[in-house]
Length: 166
Image (cartoon, rainbow, N blue to C red; front, side, top):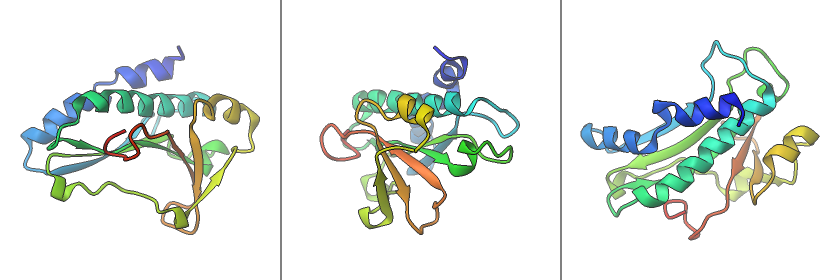
């Protein structure tokens, strides 16, 4: 396993159950978690960081299945890879994973992208990224003229058809 993947998956900040316990102990009803695989001053190969983000999303999907309850809601995560990361801009944020957790169904409002804001792609157009990331049913989207234009979103198939049930 790549070192960055290993450290990302073992990072206590990425423990979904611990984040849920912390939310339940707080006065908050909902948390939007946007976890970058590297700190601002860290650098890693483009591909390795992208793989780390997709593996973190997959780990959260697997763990969320056992953690969901009627009052413990967990959105379906997605990976965000900025164009500037792919072009190796040293100022670019590293790939990151977004997920929303809530302890109150009335306040469960995860960030979502409507189909009209998205354009689906079959590839990044960069062979090494395509071969490593676009496997096992992952889907690749690009926001069109929205707040997050200039990035790629990688999603994963939904098991039960709803993000909070996947």
